[in-house]
Amino acid sequence: MSEAQRKGCPEWRVMLHGFVDGELDSAHAAQVEDHLATCAHCKAEMERVRAVREIIDQDGVKWRPPEALRSQVLSMLSFEQEAAAASLPPPRQAPVWRRALDFIRQWSFVPSLAVLAAGAILFVNAPSQTVLLQDQIMASHVRSMMADHLTDVLTSDQHTVKPWFNGKIDFSPPVSDLAKDGFPLVGGRVDYIGGRAVAALVYRRHGHVINLFIWPAASAAQTTTVHDGYNMTQWSDGELVFWAISDVAAGDLAEFEAFFRAAAQG
Image (cartoon, one colour):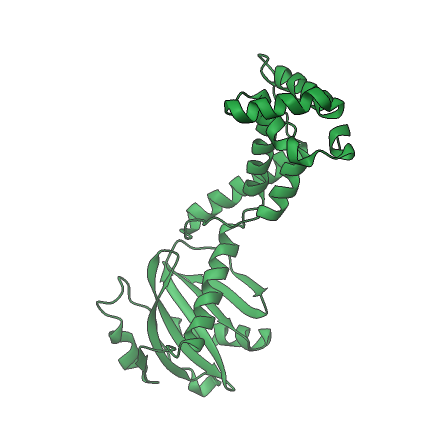
């Protein structure tokens, strides 16, 4: 922390940067000049700001990020490549303003570096494509139960549900009633995930809802995870990707996946 900050002229600190950069109007510039004439601490702070500005303005001066930041950037680029291969939805901005603001305050004496550092924080803390996709799936799952819109076609007859999707989506999802295995089909609906319309099949397990989202995508590695208290599992079959989500036990969801895949292949 600078001497000016310790001695107590916080109301002048922001104006000092504007004064050094020539960004103040004549009235405010005059006020700063009057203050500098009577405050040795702020005058010293202004000289430090000017000295740093002169260093930054020199040719060939570069700010080298720490190695940890480089590793995080490379990791995010890897996520980007994996997302493109898996046809995942485009990323959305996720605010991490609090951490960025704290960092900016620490670097406030060098505004250009503060902007650079804040941009780096926002980039490396952006959630991965997979996490963004899981957020959308979880939101659709919860919304389907809260908004009383669990199904568009309410029937356990798979021969009714499957043709119902014709003309509503651009692919044909496999539909199976798994009542004999303990997972009765409730119905289906059209949902919207990752910037496209997807099929959503609805099943039940001992009163719990299982949403199975299906859409065309390149094959991806199978994953099983817990996301905000919901069990989720993902797998690929042919040119379709499947995401099942529910608050049932992880073992029950694994059984559901096995039964559904067997029925679809049979």
